[in-house]
Image 1 (cartoon, one colour):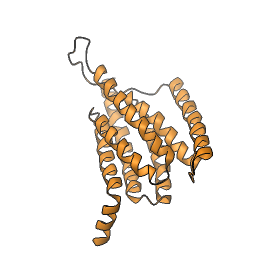
Image 2 (cartoon, helix red, strand yellow):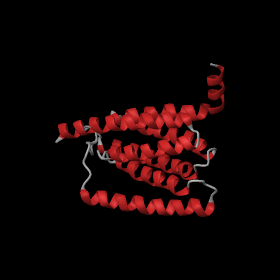
Image 3 (tube, rainbow, N blue to C red):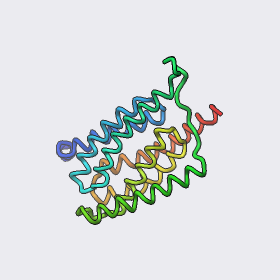
Image 4 (spheres, rainbow, N blue to C red):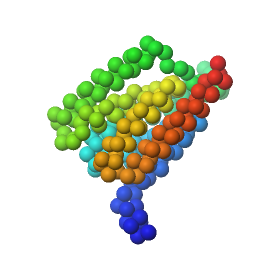
Length: 201
């Protein structure tokens, strides 16, 4: 018991970040707009965690997550209101079109190379291109979330599975458990959003 308490006393910010992040995903699955507030809080907490663990791309990515959370909040809010200010219902779930899929994959590839090169040249990151790959994927998938694109869950499943291995290697065990939960929740999120999409069609 004392060992657990000692771990919590040292890693309480990582644990808090994990709790906030799980809440963020739950709200995402339920399509509740408050998810974006938890996205901002998660970004702040994980910026600290990643900075102290040498995940520099992950750390820098938190600035993007904070910004995109603000954008997502504004986009979801504006799309759920009519021009006269009255409610018109929530932003609907949509499917990913083939042309946009190709564009997003190309953006992911380009971001991966750019971020990987920056980490390799200017930081002491031990896994620059693996770190960059998940960071670039996170940028793309989070943008998809702001648009309520169903397939963003598939992107997250892939990213989260790879991240599990990276976090075990870095001995970030609370975050490893978090990403196992993320994979499970992403599968559930995909099924829930697909049901919502079918209902709206």
